[in-house]
Each structure stands twice: as C-alpha cells, then as structure tokens.
Image (cartoon, rainbow, N blue to C red; front, side, top):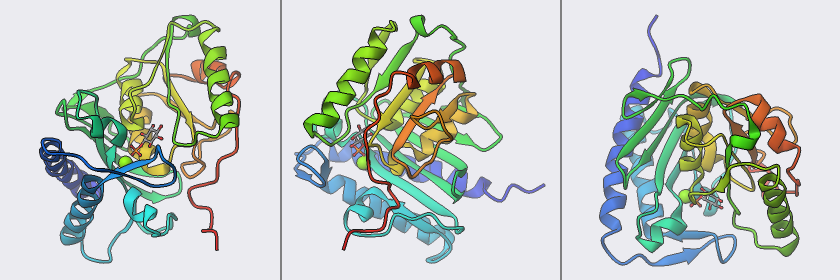
Length: 284
Ligand SMILES: O=P(O)(O)O[C@H]1[C@H](O)[C@@H](O)[C@H](O)[C@@H](O)[C@@H]1O
Ligand SMILES: [Mg+2]
C-alpha cells in the first residue's frame, strides 16, 4: 500500500538540512539575544528567520492551505497553539537557544514533525546541526541516526541508570525548589548520574540511542518534544505523564524512558508543580 506520508517525511529531512546550514552560518556572526516569557526564555533573529524559512518551504511544497503549523516563534507572537484534525507541522527552529547564543560546542537542534490528530504522530526529524547528525523516525518504521537504526537501552536497574532533566524557563523559587528536590531524590535512589544537554530534542535522542535511560521535564512545550516523542517510541522506549498517566503532548509534562520500570521508578520521586497547557485559551 502506498505510504501517504513518505514524501512529507523525506521533505522534512531535506528542509532540516537546509535550515541547519542557515543556523550554522548564523553562528559565525554576532548573536543578539532577546527575551520572551521570562528573562531566561531566549530568542534570536535566527530562531525567527529559520522558522519562516521552514514554513515557507513547506507551503511551497505542499500548498498554502494544505497543512497547519504550530511554530515556537509564531506562537510567541500570538499565533494559536491548537491541534485539529488537519495535518499539523510542529516546529522548533532552534531547540537550545541558550546553547546557541554561547556559540560554544553545545548542541542545538532543529526539529519538526507532523501530527495528524492528538497523540497521533506520523514522523519526527531532529537535526543536530553542529555535529551533523540527522535523527528521524516514521510511525511503524523504526528510528534512525544518519540512517543507522537506533534502540533504547535495555537497562532495568534504576541504580545503574543515567537520567536527564532540565530546569525550564520559570525561575519562581517555589518551582525551582521542587525541581531541585526531585533531582536530589532521584540522585539519592541512587542512580549513576544526572545530566542535561540544554535541549529537549537532544535529550530525547539520547534516550532513543541508549546513551541514557530517561529524560523528564515539567514546563517543556509541544515543539520541544513532538519529534522526540516518535523517535523515542520507534526506538523502543515509552512516554508517560509525570503522574504515571498517559502522555499528553499539550500538557507540558513528560517522562520519556527506555522502559516502564525505569519510568515508573522516576515518577515516584517527581514533585509535580502546576504549568498551563500549551493549548489553553489565550488570556484576555
Ligand atoms: O531553546 P528552546 O527551543 O526554547 O527550548 C528549551 C527550553 O527553552 C528550555 O526551557 C527547556 O528546559 C529545554 O529542554 C528546551 O529544549
Ligand atoms: Mg526553540
């Protein structure tokens, strides 16, 4: 049977490469940083420009009105962040803008993916453009890094696991206290180590390749994780909510892990704090 999404998947990979080249080039000049929801929520002209390039390339290829878009920088400017039945590209033009602005050798990512309906992800692409690694996954067809199949770790012992988390962009003391309390409790399980690359996309690819056992975060957005969701799933891993319930892309809460045992053990230690949903109606 013909695969209706293969063309879009291949095109997503090509656009990711093109956008990645733009980001690398931009990194050679001075990077001026602006802020969004808080003083630590950063954006640059490159984030904005690359998102426009991606969306216009997709519209040119598939038609002006064929698909919907949820782009990090468009949403920051007031565009809606709602999934419908219409195929929707979820785009984070630069994931890890804080790493990008240092111009040092941390990773930052370009990602996009296609969602068809809530929780029904067709494919995901994450291009780690500094190290030139292309991660991708297509529903039911496996996950790959540079065309080599990838697989999550087979570790079942939490005491030998490496766990990733990030701190998000909200610095209110009560939330930071919960984040650090959770990290302390997880470290003391004990686990082998705690890590954080500064980009959710990289973190999820690290779970997918088996470099670490799990990545969790409260406060991430759908564009940070959408592509990673299918890459982790297709690499054999699982996604859960931080309370152990089903994962919800718009909830801004996620645990991704190599297996349920590791995910549920971490979940026992997570101190949950409230965050608004990505698809919450805009405040008047
Ligand atoms: O760099 P962006 O695309 O804004 O995404 C990061 C986000 O800003 C941070 O709050 C999260 O902790 C990271 O995991 C995101 O990747
Ligand atoms: Mg971004």
